[in-house]
View (tube, rainbow, N blue to C red):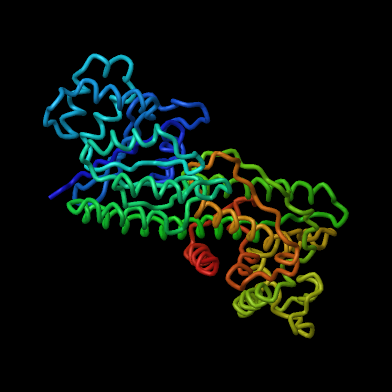
Amino acid sequence: MLTTLKLAVVGHSNVGKTSLLRTLTRNSRFGDVSDKPGTTRHVESIKVSLDKQKSIIFYDTPGLEDSLALYDYINQITPANSRLDGVDKLTNFLQSPEAENSFDQEAKVIRQLLKSDAAIYVIDVREPILAKYHDELAILANGDKPLLAVLNFTAHEEKNENEWKKLLSRVGIHAIIKFDAIVSPIDGEERLYKSLALLIEPAKVILEQWLDHIVQMRESRNHSANLIIAEALVDVTAFYKMVKSDDKQAIVDMQNQVRKREQLAINELLKLYQFNSVLESEEHLPLIKGRYNADLFNIDALKTMSKHLTKGFVSGATIGASIDLATGGITLGSAALIGGAVGSLMQTAKHYGSRMRYQLSGYRKLSIDDVIICFFSLRLMNLKESLNYRSHANTSPIKLSKLDKQEWEKGVLPKSLKVARRYSHWSTLNKGTKRNDKKWQSTIRNVAEQLH
């Protein structure tokens, strides 16, 4: 039983072999990518390990640069009237002096081809059909290895896709798929590996296992990305400052802190999806006006405070004190109550004491608008979706897209996220952060599920 599948990626110079491998292995750092010919000068490998000690090794090979001269040379050194088959002819070439001189690059490709179980032949469909490609295919066919032809750059307007299919058919290569390494189709990997499974029967189990692994990894990444975004949203929702109503600098400071928190989430998403591209933003966060709204005016917070007041009432003294005054003007339907306030306020002070003092001194709680949080959420979700489908061969900067105002201006926070308004200690942007409790973890999970 085959435990390691060896796949040689072959083709002419600058057809996108390294780019294809970056996409298939989700490794934007693999190899060198350049418009200059002959960027890859040596055989490079990358291994992906599977369960039960199975693995796939991809080999990135140099470009076949002078197939016309090589084809003539192979025929020239083949003895007349000999019965050498294709593999014998290639072996004969590899033993010749020119394999180390004039055709050094081509020899590296052929050696790897003969050592591999199959080859992926990459084609730039923008290229016209030239004689060198005829000879190139004839040389590779001599290797007696299964060949899967991959039509690259099919998203380009100027392409010769039909002409390439005709040429491949004429030389006996009928396993052909379209797979643009830069703009890869959603089902591209599945079609590629299923085609290989038909070509290489012994590798069917390995390839099916690899396909299952790809699906599992995709689901795992999506789940982890949702948790990253959910945690950032809770961080921003729970964030607040106690400020004077005319303190404009506080707004600027909060805006910068939210931007930094967004950047942290972006960095975590890029790391999760294994991208290292430079990120550019087409749009900054809109001006945060803030929510001048005391926490005690929040309905959920009122309910919580009522519970604390009820708990403390039994142990309270009969000293006359107005709950209206203690709560900054909120009666809780209890304006007539005078006694029992001391015990109640001692319980409540643990949660609201400092904020009450701020209120009575002319301060108000400044937190982030719901619509800004919706904007924040949509930007990160859009980024996640773009990373889900972005090719690792794409070297253009990753950009945060500009959002339609109608998508976020009337945004309403879900209840699972609104609860974070009550727990300022959940936010890393506030002082005294404590986020190890089960309710925080549960809230993160609930928000992540809604994102899903």
